[in-house]
Length: 198
Ligand SMILES: [Zn+2]
Ligand SMILES: [Zn+2]
Image (cartoon, rainbow, N blue to C red; front, side, top):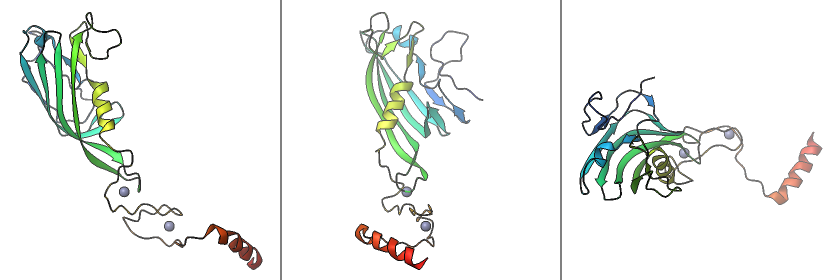
């Protein structure tokens, strides 16, 4: 399985970081949002750097499937640490709440968080730079990807849903089930009639 790593300022033996993350092969990726910010810590407050993303293939953030991830992370060195502002866009694969078909829902992944070296951070804070100078953005990217899609997402406003009897997707055609709505008060009468006729 191809892996993608974001090499940023990790020393001479690593490829030169170009400020752009381009991935062209399919991947299950837990490394993409684990970023070494050591090169930022070496700079003084006010230094900024953009990391641009261009990931046209399917990408998993834990169980969340994303396509066409583009945009950038803007890194800003502050006296306390590194402020990371996300301006990422993607399409998230979700299921329609009416017909259950999967479709791509366009989302924006936007956040702004200050990451502080773990030695100086609140012990409760998830926004830390670890001892290896890494920040782990996977949890916040995952959370933003979840929040960006409504609970009752529809594949289209006019989605016709499924037949409750046979499961036929009415967006694709009709079925032969009787589509009658029976008044609950008449249902008992209907049952009696059925009994007599059998
Ligand atoms: Zn639908
Ligand atoms: Zn049906």
